[in-house]
Length: 374
Image 1: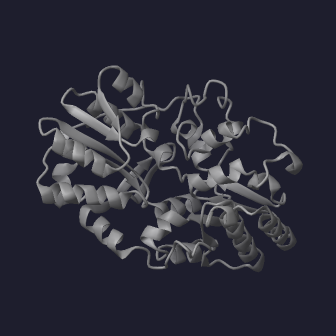
Image 2: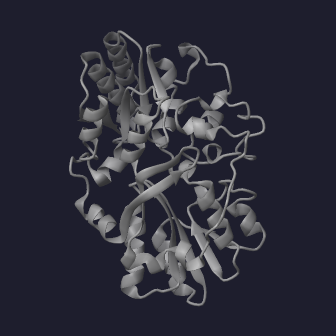
Image 3: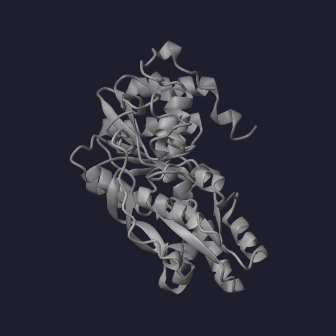
């Protein structure tokens, strides 16, 4: 199947591994930004098959994982109200709040529904004019445009019983926060191709130049990631630091102007708190003033919530790339997908979930034991 088989070809993968081995002469640390890339890397054992000099650091590119505990608790409070139909993508239902999750709210009688598009939630609002319908808008630049369009449609159609609980974050400020951290070891980035397909590449050259780091825009199949690593290692070895598009079949330098225009109309940039990391300036969006009536936080006045992360959960360090998931004492013991302490264990893009699913439970196998690229 085109774009599936051809980007999982074992022989081409071996050639890329050989090129990387032939190029690298010293240790380098690369961060893949996206959680989807992390799952591909762990599933196929790419990190284990690379030469020892190339280390992959897992970044905070899982939008569910970085949604702050305070916002989760706000979602739980809103979802528990009898006049509310609370809609969300399925990966948010198991994310733990301070004392429960959305599954538990549903089990206690809350009307919590899984939808596959924010427009599904808008349809539910039209079908239930006597109920308040809230959609949990979580994600990076990739999911923000359809959520913005849904609010735009609600306002255009005069649907007043729909609102959006917003927790959207932006990648470039996160890269800046990582690079300015005293504990930063990252020397190059694999940027998320789907984010750049929306926003383009315009924000990255300044970051690459200021921090002297290569940024390679990369896809999500094994060969996409290996090609991104090859290009990043090549730049590092040559002492270069430019933005390189290794995903041209999906990413144009200018991105998607129509999606960007929708974002600019509906949202405005704001500071955002990232779970396990803290507040990053200008790293998120909120509804702009003209759409503020559709902001669930304002509509339901869910302010004054105080939270405290579980002391045993080290997901914040995982999200910052300071430790690998299996270096957390709770990993696989008191923290599992059935009993998660943090979102990184339950999200489909979480690093802890990837390590658990693909059995990275402690001892790292030799390359011959690692999962083949298939």
